[in-house]
Length: 185
Length: 388
Image 1 (tube, each protein chain N blue to C red):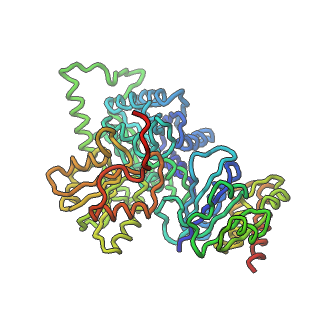
Image 2: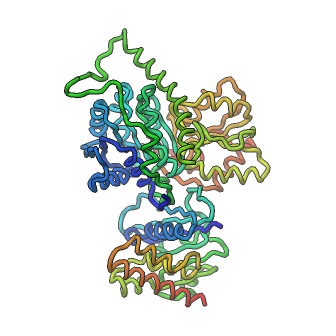
Image 3: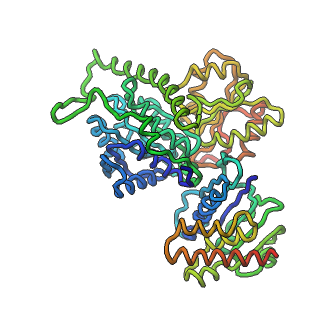
């Protein structure tokens, strides 16, 4: 088994941390994992991407993810400048932070295939008070795909965040996760 | 203990276990987080009997380590690219003075134009310095290389600087599970650094001073002999490491499918992807083997001749170029295989961080084997040259 995920967003939104978070969480469930960013655009606001591989065998390849199983978009504004679905596998899925429904996004982007949306900015503003959507989209990805367990994500939050920020992020992940579970039903 | 960490940390943790006495560095991307991690350990009191010195430049950092190493201190620095070039005047001296400074070099392209991204041009520029160069494929190998580097460099039969070369970004910035060694493993493996000659205030010595024509040459002979001895010692230390850690990274080379007639030769993190490429091409019926070159200096000529002596075609993937000639690794390999009949195709690719996909490499190798791909740059865009 090898799952390849590509994350898109803008510098400063935690695009890199989203992939790293899942590398830690995947390892907790006994998988081999590898995450790495696109490099150099360490400026707030520029489009950035990060990559994640989760496998039951050691991950030896380190090229960028060209044919992802899942694409996760943290910021709806990157659709204007980045072809986020480039190379997305036929049975793959786009999971996006988008203020409208998945059918709207499919029409807006003129794409076919499986798409799920969640208004992660709204969720993050409600719970964190800031438009940082990475943890919400981690929850959304896992809710939409079932690649890991919600409990593992919560454990990972406790490892990587402290105090009230940990509590808030656990809540945010759970809400995004449950929303996606509901959408998939 | 297996833990998901970034590449930087896998190196910093290994350095800590080797109990260095002096760490001195100047920040440069993509190296900085290695010494940031060490600075944090130092600030937290985790590095006993150690001084962490911040320097005003890479030149100063290397100079401080030359002084420290000459007093018998175990020393560490990390740098790359322009930082390594700026250090180079001092590092040639460190080698000549036989000071076993260990350097982590997250390989990065050379300016101009400015690129912070990865290729192997920086360490290649230090090829002739008298520094041992080991290239690693992944962060576990980088972690494991640090204690081995000290053991080899500080051996009385060697006493040369040792540079662990790891692909910048591709390795340094990757998050992955690493088996972080226990202190006891390194304590049992690595003896303390006890050089026969070292400076103290009670016994002042001069290192590297004036050598007129009647003695200079003998110092160079001694360095070449030390490199030869390093070649044998490294094999021994590599084997010892396998016993200690349970991980076998091979010798100077790792050869996969040694009975092949067609080979790909490469160094560094790209080897991981090539393992998959070779498996796929073999399934297509292509009798292809893979040589991962680990040790670049001293260059393992005998090993290469024994594995590649009967090869018909060798495809070298070079991520650096000696401008005005060809890819650095190809030059070395052609020299090592002089007198043998293999056709050597030199492919220069992935410069300045240009990503290499599996599909791209498979097509390239397939075409080269079919005789449809000649030596030269691969994956460069056609463009109209505007600069004379």
